[in-house]
Image 1 (cartoon, helix red, strand yellow):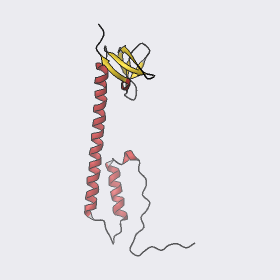
Image 2 (cartoon, one colour):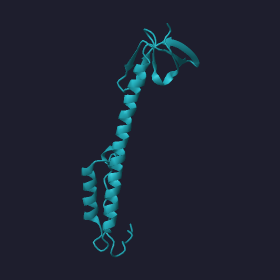
Image 3 (cartoon, one colour):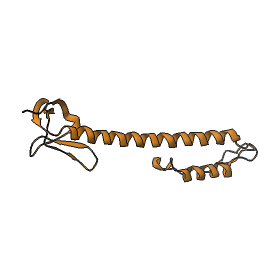
Length: 139
């Protein structure tokens, strides 16, 4: 079997281990990758320092975007609690099999995933997203 020869002055790059998506935002992982990149770079053609600075800036940006995403998710969860709890005692119109039904909201329950379930009867709970209309409580 004939093997292709490598051009002079190039180094072989070892396989980089795959990293899980949730580990990419980890500072420790970033530093390990940076050290590995420095360790295996070609000494005849070192990486430009501005490249490392750019990578660091990109990492910081991803980290901040991750923080913003978490804040937005927390805000959305809080908004859902406020909206769902404000429906208690009011009449709502909700979809069931393509038909709009009306009923008074007796309570709200949150399932383990955090989704709001509006209790419209003793036995029926509907997702908050199925509420189509909110009406004042009947006297």
